[in-house]
Image (cartoon, rainbow, N blue to C red; front, top):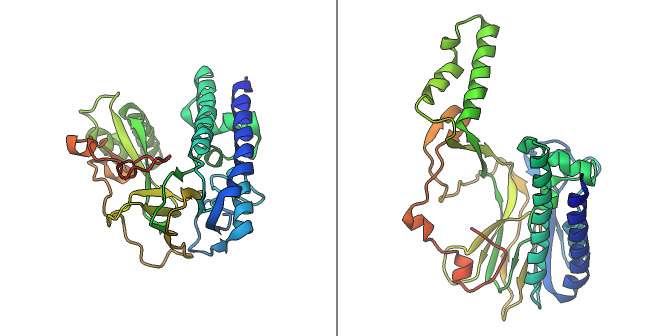
Length: 315
């Protein structure tokens, strides 16, 4: 039953082993930062980063690229992160694209089994662990490696403190949740169901079809990110989650790098100015109408492609 997942994972392992054997031979310069593993599903107020260079950076990255199991003491639901960069003398874009495609094949095999067993989407991690091992971490396994086949003039590492993740949920599912909540509250507080806050929220959805889809927004724990400039524009060309080191090509001049600092929750953190504006449906539940792509928004170019830099990056 799990053979397709295990087979796809074996191909991924083989590709990663081959990649780890090749890319260190092309390193021109590098820095990575080791972050402490979290023992609970909460980011502490401060995080100290450990700067690694040279062979230490290479060794740590080779391990991180193929590390898909939670380490001893690592809390479930957390991920191991190793932000940083490697400037290489040769392109590794084709190999990285192959690895990312193999990760997608593992994800597809998991999804195929989920559909065959008629399980809910939340069952994907459970199927993955049954196929590969109890300590396997879905996010560490499936996250992509970022590679740019160009030489950046500037790389800036920062902490993202206000990022949100978005998912999709049908109105029917929201109604089901609200109805159950209203009934439970009415029973618990010995009141009429019509007087509960959940029922009032249900009335807000009265004109919406059950099949309509809403955007659900959830806060994401602070995490490191990297911005890369390839052109002379003041606007960055790419901004990535710095879960793993990014691979870039060497240019005539080495890139300027603004390094990652220790995380301090109490330090002032500015929100992104380009955050999407959404229409609230149920504000206290962070449910919104899905954003519609306008003609102008749809024509916004990928700045990395505009700068003629092939990469794994997608807006």
